[in-house]
Length: 413
Image 1: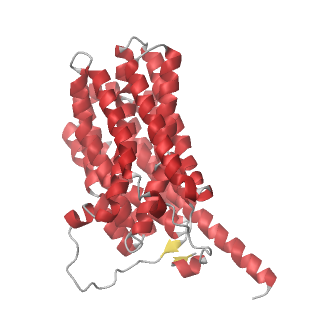
Image 2 (image 1 turned 180 degrees about the horizontal axis):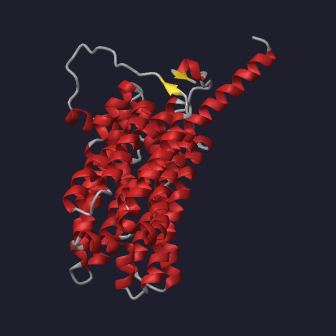
Image 3 (image 1 turned 120 degrees about the vertical axis):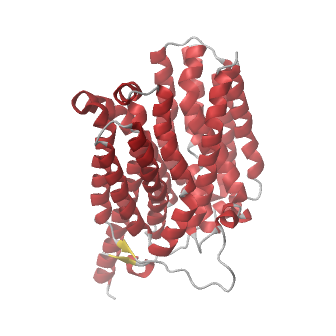
């Protein structure tokens, strides 16, 4: 192949990779929007449905339960049939579920369909990560996916209240339909990944329990649960804590937004550190854990607004660093089943959030319980340091020096 032809091939391959990364990021944004869209206008929803705020909270919980439980089965399907195909199918499911919910403000209807939408977000999340990996996307791209998924939730919180005067209680669901359709159109522009039919195994097929307890992923599960899980709990309850510590509702909301905003930035940063300084990723992870644990403890300690802002910034900055190393490390440890690997670590993080959220809420009903809960979260976060020895070398295994052309990786235009 002559030099000009090689340059054309390289440009075409880069374009294929960029299109695949764009499709993966679109999946991440759709997941974030559909998870948090209901939480953007809880009071209008409660009034329209004639239910309490606690029941509105169940609208999100119902989705998250399905989102969590489908992680490993979804990863298995993605490994078998391809990330793009599964991502497209479940974007359609998510759009349809949101559309049907708009028929009438009936609690039974939304509680019945939110788990269906949760299936779309659960499989879509794993599919986005795997699609980027299959296209040769770097750890920075994986971190960017995590930031976009988080940013999608922030987008829903910002946009849905603006739509509510015109669309009333249907605003979050119509927004979910629109974002799902837009994401599907972007993903359709990406290259097709061929189905990866698993080779016949000499032994019995692993059970979901066996996949969920894969010892090769144990340290990554601990790290992801401590960082991802604790950061979501802090984001959920930090406003309530700060208000009880004497800050205004407006100031508490702004301080909480600092933690969320910096997580969006720190997830790509973690990927950049893994790509640029793989030999030092263990130190970077340890530093991020210590900084975030101290930030969480600082929020519990109280103090003036400035101190709370610094503590929230520490939480947000440290919370995202581990995301790209965790998902990249999981896929490197299970190259035979990367979708299952990502689904496993993400499932445990989500299970922790589901189990701990009501416990933290209960702690707030006890005098000083909010502070105690945040101190416990800080201790759990710091305990993740025990997962680092022996982990960083496997997480930072260098990628192959040559990225195969898209056609060799099973992609077709």
